[in-house]
Length: 589
Image (cartoon, rainbow, N blue to C red; front, top):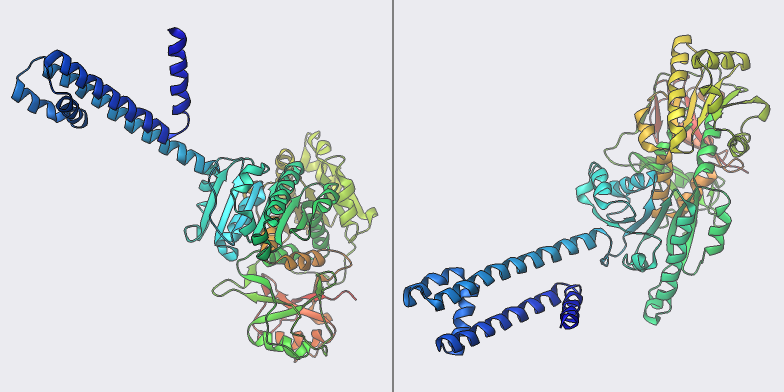
């Protein structure tokens, strides 16, 4: 008998575990069986008709107030007592039903949060994984790069939702957040990958990103086998953040040009190159940050234009009248920016690279008062502060812009040992005649060390009135925001720049190669040229005059750097002061 009861209990548990539909079926079966049993009992005990007994019991079960009607007609007797028992069972039954429905709804909500529901979206932007850059990517999408965003990560959906709820225009964007392992094939299948506009993969661990990429490849291969889907197949753009250089080769081996194009962003290479270029030109980091960001000044690639058969100079003049700057065309061989000769004809097939200013946005970058005392190239002496055993790759990148003999290295461990850090740093600055200081932090642990040392260096520069710019690489965007400075000579680079670049690349992958080319020595360069060194007639002091003169030399003027501001894409009639610098893109020939 015990074995039979165990078997019955096991099967009931099994049915209950299948969901709300089965639970309701079991509950209804129990209720009907109970009411039939009551009807039979009343027939035997009180000669009460079975049909009437069943119906009256059902009425008592459904509405507990019916007990008063039964009491009025029969008085309080055994029949009423039976109905009272049925009423009590009804109360318990309704309570159980409400509990079942409530649990089912909670389970459904939990499943939605955990990513266990299919995403019925098209042309949506998908973000897979978690890192500091994720929030920047989402913010850029919300600001206008995408109106439908799907996020899948191992982090709680409520945490991510809370952080992004403070972004402007958040309520105008459809953001779907799911919790789940983004490398699992089953989770990715629910995201409607094949209908997505772009995919961004961000992780601190490259191995997780590689797993995601392999799962995506499997999904797209499966989808591509479907004959119907082949007719509407399009190559998916995947933008992937890589933290270690060695993994770039592995990513390239997974790439499948028929199914998707992987655009690799090697985080530290870009940040190191930016720091290297900023050694030469103070304020260049601010320009790149503005160009990558969606707000204000932006760059777009125009495939459809009305410049066919116009020469490049005339096409550029046409754009300038519309408050846009034609930077060049896309080189079809390597996707980089090509500045044609002024007489070269624009073809219909050419993709034009255009710098423009968004409506109602600021066109100026406010900076602290800054004057270059000498416009000739300074032979900089760099104090490089970073973790031990990390200098090889950093020096490899910045050595393209400065001689290795002029780079002096200090490790965080060495500084931390000093009892009075301020005196120690002052002695190093004076002894080596330092002209610029670079701090590098590649993880959360060293962020605190870098921030502490940066505060000490700021105090030294303020107290001793040193004219020494500081370039800092802080891993965490939150930490970067804590010690951010508006001073052009105290610029902090972080993953925020990478996030904006990834969001830009997801919209148009060609832009990634344009920016990559600008950040690579040997490619096109953004430089700052003093106005008085341009050898232009001083009467021609309007931006349009300088723009037209430089375009003849395959150079593109994109802005002006003044004493307290940088202006990108200025009005064509703006006059240039003699103390200003012209921001120029040079064509590498």
